[in-house]
Length: 145
Image 1 (spheres, rainbow, N blue to C red):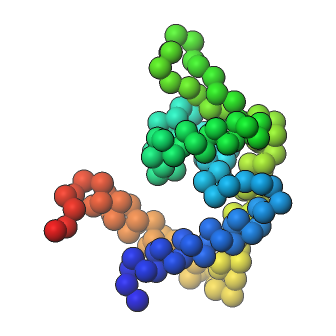
Image 2 (spheres, rainbow, N blue to C red; image 1 turned 90 degrees about the vertical axis):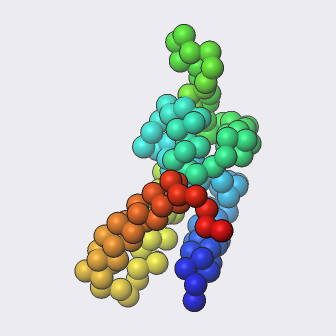
C-alpha cells in the first residue's frame, strides 16, 4: 500500500470512529479538533487555532460560527487589538471538550489494543520523528513536479 492511501484511509477510519462516539453531542467533524486544541490553549486567536488544526481561515470561521451557535465558545477582542478575536471555551464548551478528550482517549486505547506497550512507545517515537521531518519537507519544499 502507498503512504498516501494508508494516511488517508487511517484518517477516515479514525474520524468515523470518533464521530460515532460523539454522535450524541451534535458536534460536526471539524469541531472536535478545535475543542481539543482549545482545552489546552483557551484564549487562542483564530490564526493560532487555524495553524494548529491545519484548517484554512475561512473553514475555521465556519467551524467557530457553529460552535458559537451551540454556546461552546465565545469570541472576545483583547484590549486594544481590534483586528483579531480570541476564542474562549464557555462552561458548556469545557464540558464538551472533556467529552472529546475522553473520546480521543478511548479511541487511542482501542487503536492500540492487543499491541504490547513497548511496541506502541517505539511506534509513537518513530512516528513523531518522521512526522516532524515530513511536515518540514512539505512546509518548505516546492511541490514535486
